Amino acid sequence: MGALRGRAAASACLFLALAVLLALPGLTAGITRHYTFNVRMTKVTRLCGSKSIPTVNGQFPGPKLVAREGDRLVVKVHNHINYNVSFHWHGLRQLRNGWADGPSYITQCPIQAGQSYTYDFTVAGQRGTLWWHAHFSWLRVHLYGPLLILPSRSQGYPFQSPHKEVPIMFGEWFKADTETVINQALQTGAGPNVSDAYTFNGLPGPTYNCSSKDTYKLKVHPGRTYMLRLINAALNNELFFAIANHTLTVVEADANYVKPFTATTLVISPGQTMNVLLTASTNPASQAFAMAVAPYTNTQGTFDNTTATAVLEYYAPTRPTSARTLPLPALPRYNDTNAVANFSGNFRSLATAQYPARVPRAVDRHVLFTVGLGTDPCPPNRICQGPNGTKFAASINNNSFVRPSTALLEAHYRRRYAGVLMANFPTTPPHPFNYTGTAPNNTFVAHGTRVVPLAFNTSVELVMQGTAIQGAESHPLHMHGFNFFVVAQGFGNYDPVNDPTKYNLVDPVERNTVSVPTAGWVAVRFLADNPGVWLMHCHFDVHLSWGLSMAWMVGDGPLPNQKMLPPPSDLPKC
Image 1 (cartoon, rainbow, N blue to C red):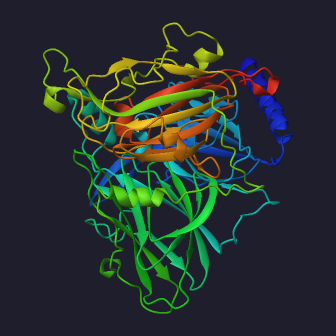
Image 2: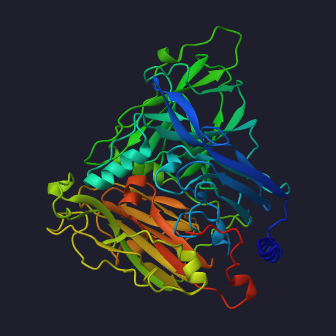
Image 3: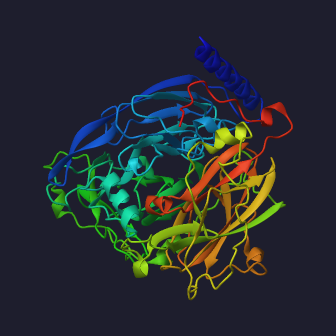
């Protein structure tokens, strides 16, 4: 009975919070939608071989969740596998409700084998394409699915409604067991083995062996417009995407509307989502066209340099077309950073009365993070396979994040910090150097479970500076609990005197995931109006495993509706 009373009390607080939220302008009430996730092992065959993988409800990719702005979602998770697991609802702000955010050991202890947990949250003031995925080790390589938030019925889209909406999730497939892959890499200090294929909605397509039958096909009617809800669920790769002989119109990024622009090739980082309009030709030159994804990277290590294809097929009373015979769209070279920069520079918020760009104009805290790789010394009596006999590591401001043994959010809520976290994460680089030039002789990183404390409603300007240590490459940084405005980006080292004069404070794009450019920097602004502990990390899971993450610890505000909700009674224990 005590557990029931605890859950009832938490639900009552959630309803009270929802009532307060719905009193705000532009927010609407919705319905409660219930979902059940049974996490179990399922045999799946790809690339000439079968293996048992974790799935949700036996599906790969996992089930599509659909909600409307203002809805409450209740997702009951039952863990039937031998791994710990937790789930993140990527891009949902989880206002005051970090208990539903999902990253293991940050906002909750993981759901252990044989245990259950209910994620109970409300979609407030958001609409668009998001997604859900596991947030423990590398389990998200198989445990992911779309989370589609429809606009309120009174609003609709700020563009002509499409004939049909189609989620397309890009992923990676490994022949090997991915938990073995990352555990072996962490043991040896080397870079992990790379994936064997990219996928469209879990299917690799005909460019890979034994995969012609595993080809995703999108069927379209001539002259009609389709909205493709694109999601990059790949584990460790940014991707170029194109459809042969077709132009796409980008209308949304990370569940935020943007000023529409056209492109023949897109680039999308892990964690990012993008809605694009595809208008089918009224008189197509062929019945079918190839869709393709291929990697963008500047890594000095190995990577999966393959191309996955799918088929855009026009409805027509003719014989089916073989996907193997379709010419591929022209994609940029794998290391074409200029193509990426040109595409990224197109994004602008709508910045209208209905969809304003509420970028903070005044800044309370200026923060500079260096983001990149580093090394750890090889332990005694061991042979390590990282650079010069060391072990690969990654860091922000030279701090490699150490996963705690208990959840940071619970420690914060109960104000029991000793032995769990330190509120001294460096907000400027501890050892300044020529970040995009010659690396320093000492590339060893420090370690700690450190957070940046922020008072409620602090406006923050965060500059993320890429480094060239162990090679310059881009890093897709994802922030939990907040969206941010991308006010500027550039190459080389950030100039605190001249670069701020180039800031876009009128209509910068609003996102939850942004790539720090290769050998460059990006500046974002956000308002810390969401109390709790919120993870920020590289969405390359290999870099996350090496420690490229940190957390913001945001205090309560003075008003009742500015304070964290109490934890639910079934919150997992560590």
